[in-house]
Image 1 (cartoon, rainbow, N blue to C red):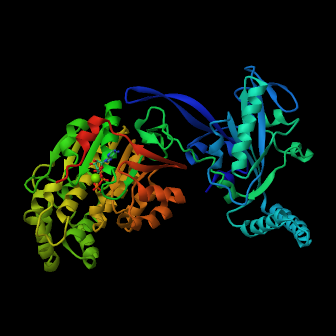
Image 2: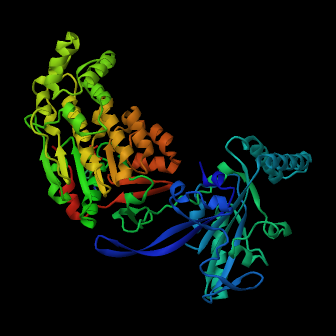
Image 3: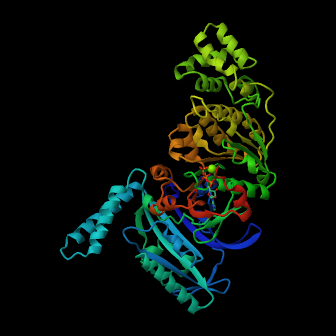
Length: 592
Ligand SMILES: Nc1ncnc2c1ncn2[C@@H]1O[C@H](COP(=O)(O)OP(=O)(O)OP(=O)(O)O)[C@@H](O)[C@H]1O
Ligand SMILES: [Mg+2]
């Protein structure tokens, strides 16, 4: 769940740092927050933190800071670089804290530090009991202040919330900053105080504890002297410190996408995330395809060797394929694809009789036929092709199923199966729009059939080597009535990481996609999500899956084309995708 339950004792440091970023042939200086996690025990240190919490570089807790203290005065320290440093502790918090408030200090300080220690359950109960008894007697005094009443409420609230997942934790949050002179240091301290007050917090510069704070030592015995009072809260609330939310997204060696709401550049590299998958959600006209094209183009320019495959149900990409560094292949009802499931089954170890049976059930039969089809496919798995399989089914006397399957032997379906298997080269985008036949009872059926078999077939190439690559699928919602198709997307998503691949799924009507089991899994598990403008109907789902804050919901409801929220692990960055003039011209969707 959170690092505060994962590690019983630790230090979390946010250290803003200036970086130079290459973006669209420009060099920009940006402020990037680096996070460091220090953890106490030997055993904890051996946990694979880089997997659990990819943002952090776990360090032994007592590593001395980059700029060590050389001498200590009562209320400041002298640092090795000659500057004067000061530590200020936040010691009073309002009943509700604005989520993410530590961010407000980042441009003022060198480091923002959170030290915590969880308390074993039994001891927690004792501590809360004692606090409750004390606060109760204080509050029962008729002259009790509203502050006391508030404190009692807080304790009651803690008492209710401790247990289950939540532990009691002691914590301290402080800021470390430095300036060349005393005057400047005092000025900066004043600014920090103003920011704190505006959030109803108080800060204090504890005398004689400056060095200790610079060395992250707030544990007893220091706190016992009353110099630094540790606060109590529960692990869930500590999470609302959100110091882990970084409102900037600047991945070194990433692709420049646009700017965040403060005007800072957004630079993104999906391949450094826990998995490489990307989902792009938003209402029609929100700017999803523009984003995808801009991203693909710049990724390809930056890394010509990255392998890209695209499935383009509306022929939106094949027209601009050259700009994306891709080869366009338009599939028409006359293209012979050679994607016979029996042939694919022989060629692909992961495509099994079970999968073929689901596919045939979905496109030709009814659900009740699935069990029967499974045994038929299994018994006849050595059939040369669909035609031979149908013949064999007929011979077994199962005329009902044979009759249903006959649809596969005539156009347009037969074309999908017949012919030599389409030669597949990476860096190709397949346009499927012409498969939208009028007068079909089930809309998008032929598209789905081709989409499914093509995705299955592509996996062979994608998952051959461990090598950077991307499969993008736009308009995924068209396939929500075809669980087998959605299932193939999910299986690509699941296997992608192992082979260095990324699935980028782009869709409107996120709620329809999430209503399918496979679709939901893909949405929930992608490490990177880009949420563009949404219709009202999509908001409940957005809140459920992405735990949006209210201002984020408003952003989505009021978004202009190209405005989105990038949700990358614990980061949440509101941004505007910035195509260049040339890209905007080329990638604009025609108003046909
Ligand atoms: N970042 C942007 N900056 C400026 N204009 C944009 C941006 N993104 C999109 N647009 C404008 O909005 C139009 C629609 O964008 P886009 O085709 O990407 O929408 P979409 O979300 O893919 O919609 P659909 O779901 O209908 O495919 C574009 O043709 C372009 O004119
Ligand atoms: Mg689009």
